[in-house]
Image 1 (cartoon, rainbow, N blue to C red):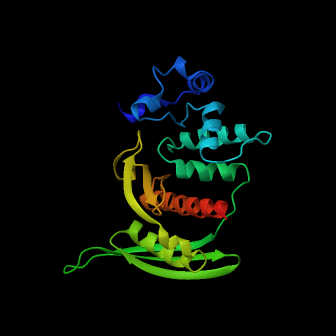
Image 2: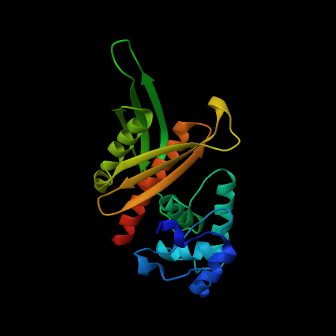
Length: 233
């Protein structure tokens, strides 16, 4: 039985499931080695967000916190974001929306250059300047593409301050054209899968510029990693 057999999306639907799962599930998902999944989308209500927040270990009990996150999710979904397969980005968004997130670094600037010659394949070079606690770090790195180069340069800059960054790496990269977009000016949605060996998480980014969308997803991935490590301490 597929993993979507016990997936729930609509706000009213999820509210009912949390009160009486038998109303929407023909059997306990565990009987067939499955588990209940609650998705977050533009159809989500407070029940969806509350369920996901609890699953992600985020406290939304403070006054207006739940409603604030619901509004933020719907706003982002209207821009083309999808969080049903990006729990990493959702976790970061929730924490930022309710003031539970500590910014691990600040981006000062970055640039990416891709070059190709007759004798050599395309090579990308990324330069990044960040600041951590008022201390600036400028690094550069190469990669087989602009996203790969940005990933290498950013992790190289952060390793000095956060050695645990060495534990993580990207395992998948997907790009989708947004509906209603056309040609080379089309908006895109990027989905990144990352792991540190003990957990796999996904993040997303949206922009008309594929580099910017990829950067957003990459930043969310690293911020998720550093945030969960901070919580363990």
